[in-house]
Length: 76
Image 1 (tube, rainbow, N blue to C red):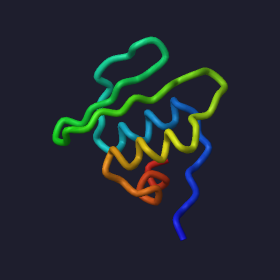
Image 2 (cartoon, rainbow, N blue to C red):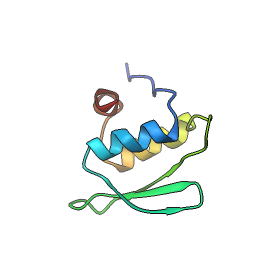
Image 3 (cartoon, one colour):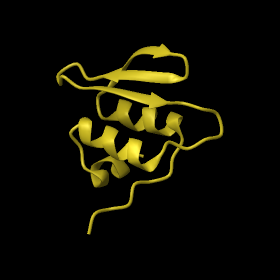
Image 4 (cartoon, rainbow, N blue to C red):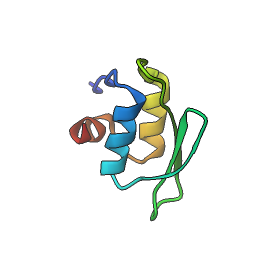
């Protein structure tokens, strides 16, 4: 059974992806654009004060990053 995607804020998601080796490439408005120096993947994470990232969006970004939900949860 697949793990549930955690309900976290955008700030927490950015922090976890940074632990996985992603770097903040730029910030455009309220979206953090992250890139990995060795992979050809870019992530866009919305960071809105007091709001959580949508489950579908977070699941997609985890997949684009080449991770499983379990691996992502371990980084939190």
